[in-house]
Length: 309
Image (cartoon, rainbow, N blue to C red; front, top):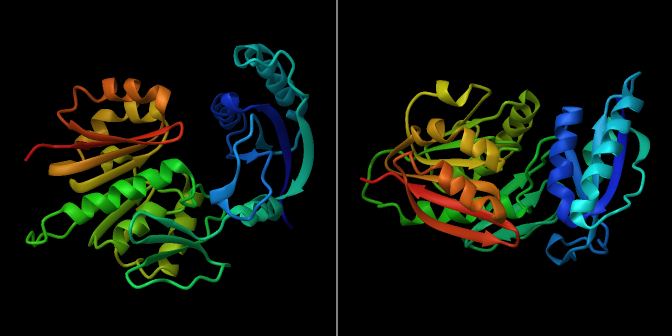
């Protein structure tokens, strides 16, 4: 029998999205979804930004549900004025089946070209590749990561450029570490781009299951090792380490991330709001890595560091 969830929808100012999303993750212990209220297209590239967005959190129904929603309402009342919202609509509650939660977003996930050669294609969509295309078939399931979000796009673009610039005369196998692998998209891309050893780690066992399915679907299961092992316990160093997670977690893990970067290797940090970019840079000043570039897409930032040869 399918599990039933209480889907709680909050209509809030767009600038408040990250604050509310982080709070809902903490309050529910589950993932959230964010909707643009002006979606009138099936192409992700033409979605218009809206001043008001819907953040959806998912609660397991039970005796404590009313108390948690009351906490959420209080949070919105307290923080809304900071974002120009003196009054925020009362969150709505809808009971849904887990299968509806897991698949309802699919209508907005279309094939997307990223960088020079990478193409992210949902498993249920037809696509005719061009010569040289590296197609990643993806079914994110309940895990985060379709490749369409700017944080993932920035990471993929940086990864492709780094791999393309590495010396071809180096006979050592390219090793890549993907921290917070989610759906496995970055790990799969690394393998498609030529990495011979890829390790993807995530604290969520369900994400690792989904990532493993996607690796098998893309024919890279023999190259990608997926684990729930803590970062500090993963052996070895890597030519490229990728971390597409929250800015606060990046800074908290700065030392652990830095020691995984091989001499001459790269560390790619994404998931950073531009307003938090300087905060992350400051958090990595003592790591011994040098900042090589910062790239941006809208309100998001991606930082590329390198360990000197």
